[in-house]
Image (tube, rainbow, N blue to C red; front, side, top):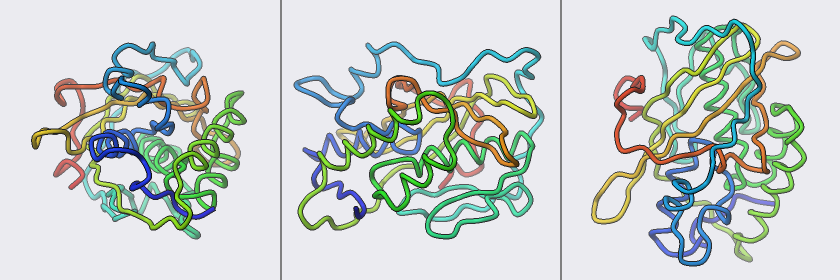
Length: 241
């Protein structure tokens, strides 16, 4: 399977909502826009399914510096990296090798959730899910990602760059073994407005690297919610632009 073409994803309004959700890990386009209900409506009405497990002695707001982050373009999405915290291996479009630090956990949550997406095709999404996602929901996430690609692709898909910005995050908890956070992404809405969504992501340290915890229900859509502003979130320098 090749990259998924956004041109096959319905109306321009629908595509905008889909790419806004992309960087926050909302993978299932079909689940966010069905019938006459918009993605935003679905996110407001759907319960948030936490893709994390309770862990004692979580540090609610670990000390973390955002200085020195390098922002690289990945299919139109600017993703942060660090020479010290990773990712240290980006061969074949993947991203592996993160430090066992709060910033390493944050970077892993971003890179894994973005790449575990049908938009990039099976060459990226499936290895990411198989190698970098853990938990009982892995099989459901993999099946859902394949289904989204099959439903939305065109006979001869042409890659289209996503128009989305990762703007900030909020810690929910951290230990050297587990980290939970909300990640905010933004993109163009209707009438020149900006649409924002936050997605709840958990990561765990296993076998020498951070792994994302598979969301419940087959996609991160159940742990996403719309946000009106970045109040209460930590902003990335330059808003990830």
